[in-house]
Amino acid sequence: MEPTTFLYTFLLTTFLIYTALLLLRRRRTPPLPPGPTGLPLVGSLPFLDPSLHTYFTDLSKKYGPIFSLQLGSKLAVVISSSSLAHAVLREHDNTFANRDVTETGRLFSYGGNDILWSPNGPTWRMLRRICVHEMLSPQSLDAVSSIRQQETRSTMHHIHASSGNQVDIGAEMFLNVMNVVTNTMWGATLEGDEERESVGMDFKEVVANITDLLGRPNVSDFFPALARFDLQGIQSKMAVLMDRVDSIFERIIERRSCDEGKRTKKDLLEFMLRMEREGGDSKTPFTMSHVKALLIDMFTGATDTTSTAVEWAMAELLNKPDILKKLQDELDQIVGKDKLVEESHLSQLHFLSLVIKETLRLHPPVPLLVPHCPSSPCTIGGYLIPEGTRVFINVWAIQRDPSKWTDPLEFKPERYLQQGLQRDFGGKDFDYFPFGSGRRICVGIAMAERMVGYFLATIVHSFDWKLPEGKDVDFSEKFGIVMKKAIPLVATPTPRLSKNELYN
Ligand code: HEM
Image 1 (tube, rainbow, N blue to C red):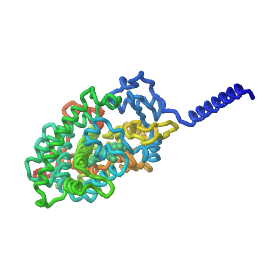
Image 2: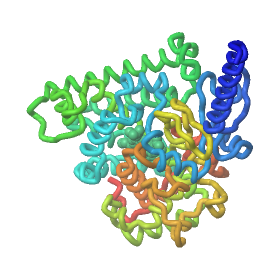
Image 3: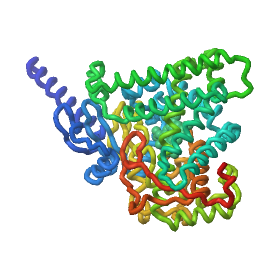
Image 4: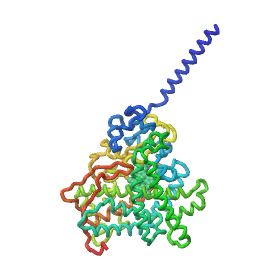
């Protein structure tokens, strides 16, 4: 063969092999999920609706149960069916049990040192273990039941003092759970001290602002190259708030050091400080940043979620007086009108548990879960989800899916009595998982169940409630990392127990 002919044949063969390999590879690599095209550079960012959960639900009707959106330089994927949620949270749980840490998340968590934002790995496992073991397991919760009793009674006295006047139900629950959580975490330090109340109030204000910033879309997250310019000023606002949080923590930790050896009660803070002095466990270091990050995790994880749940439950009950009456009948039968509800009654209050279940179906407080993030490329439903994608799981839409639920928009607590419809909070049914599922499932379920159940039972048992004259319940939602009622629920309590002394 002529040298030039040989060269041409060689080049042509190489080209053909290369093209064939390319085509083969392209055929083997699944496509990205379908979705709106968006604009050059910014993608779908300009079209984002602040009510992300309904916006995503509408898009899923057009593009299907898995779709993608380009948000600046970030790819987001939204999952809206129970079978695909199963694929992400069960079949590929290990890959997806990571977070795409936002700029505000990083500041909030002392550099990603908390449970919420840590990647799936030994540090995250250690942090979860500490909180479960020292504060959130059934045994640790039993050990501090008197704190919950004392705080719930004190809220009840406060509501009683407002009899005949309008009460903001969510705000009452927020104060209640805030006191319970702070007392559980560091109560032994500030116990009996009026400083406890002032620390609580400081914290309440700062944390409300922090939660708001955590839920706000931030250009820095969509264009990481611009993060250092902080174009909306969100990071600098967060930094100021975190300075305030830090000075509260410093104050408490300093007090705790002065008290060394005098305390009789143990709490989460004491355990963590000891662990910090020892430097962690054999595998992972534990620093002061971890101590503070866990304190703020527990506080923010518990407060807005549980108070929102109680507020939505009361909204549904006031909208359906027959269901409210049925719940009061159950309470009267199990507790009686001449006693107060105790936490020990909860296991017998079956209808109450159905009411709470149904509330968390229609109003999951964290409607898109906390976004997950695959640590390596993964195929879901025949589509590629690249590493680092922000994955939203629309539990709000899944729990209202008409192909899974009869009368999905109706508040029907009895539905769970039907054969095959028993549901719990463990995340094993992928048409019902208000606390998430898999490795990243909420760490505070046991505490949430007790707090919501006990508080709801107490206010429904101790008072009759009336909406303001001529007003119906407003069900509009305000989307955020925790979805609240757009208009806070106010109602007027009237005492209904047999003896006035019970309210003292
Ligand atoms: C009704 C009350 C609550 C609801 C509906 C709720 C719901 C959730 C959801 C949906 C997640 C995200 C799961 C995921 O990423 O897939 C979560 C995570 C978390 N929750 Fe809760 N939660 C509640 C109460 C609490 C309480 C009382 C605490 C602590 C005292 C808490 C602490 C946390 C923490 C630390 C995480 C992060 C877990 C991780 O990333 O590993 N939550 N919660």
